[in-house]
Image 1 (cartoon, one colour):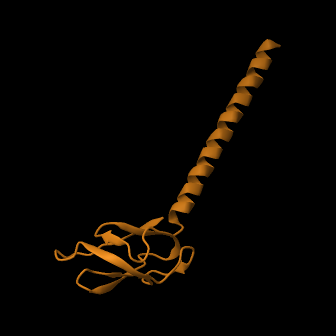
Image 2: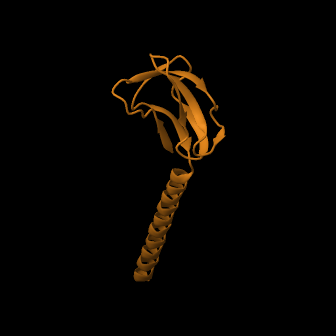
Image 3: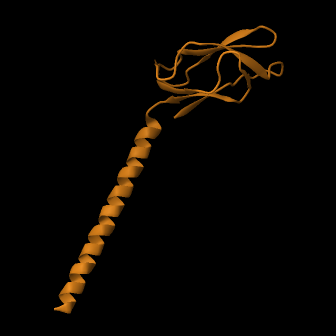
Length: 115
């Protein structure tokens, strides 16, 4: 998952209000697509683009909500962590299988010793 952060470098602006979302949760986005419009107290309007392509999973703010610079405003599932998590699950399954095989071999050795 990739976090979408309200990142605006200006000493004059520390907060903005969510004006309009261009995409809904579950929508596909491409890197650079407009995600949300934010309006500053001074009335300046700017658009936050998608930092990566993927599926917009969660919006943390709705129109009218105030956000601060540095806040995570949404998450996009870019597929990268999903694959990494799947790899970890596969590794854990393989380790469990190896441990079970070792236990089975130990049981066979103990049975041979008993004969």
